[in-house]
Length: 297
Image (cartoon, rainbow, N blue to C red; front, side, top):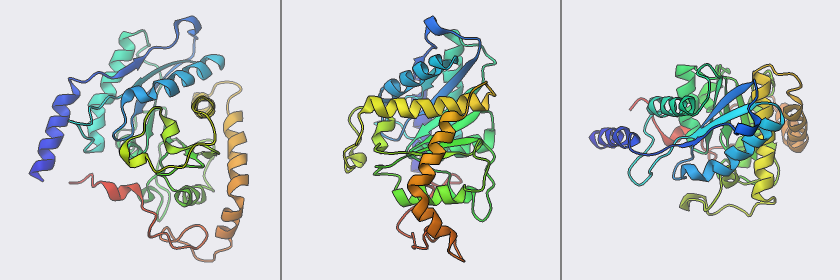
């Protein structure tokens, strides 16, 4: 307990000393409609690994008539660790302040995204603080505690899965689609991008715990463009902008077609619980990321 407290204290001290990734909206395509996206990196992944994806999102947003300011929290993982969802507040506020200093209007709607295990911390942080225009989970899912026994999560969330994800297992993603099947898909869409891997939500060399993935079936720039198009469409939809929603709907249809055999089997089960897969297969071995931390300690 004392060791953990010391680690968290060191984290908070170090957070003041480390630079965040700040990307103002491209000056040549500033539009009347502005938004911000604040990224929390996956554990053991450097903030710079998200620059290609965030720039791809800015390009996609510009084409759609939206000026997107973006930033990614930086952690020196050799000396820092993400201990608790509430630890994100100082870091998120710092990025917003930096973006405002670089030309963003203070009242601009802010979206939040996270990758990998950090999706666990972000979704609990936003559930408590609520100050977001929408959440984007990359290679992660809503924790079972938020939808079992009933769906109780209120933050609008786009979940983007990867068909070749070696971290967020395929059956865990199918389970999440099943759990969200009756929700408003404009508010809680789950889409799966075929041929992509967990690390393609970032760039560069993966950390040691991600080096067992299968090779991707698409190049990084193709993966980033696909992620960007659906993420920006979700953001525009949440902002109520004209012509939004088509990309999300298209991917919802393709995801449904891809997973339909498993989803059909799950619908035929007379009894189903989160301890069982959507096909009735017991998923004891498919962990929920909530097993990885205890926010009350």
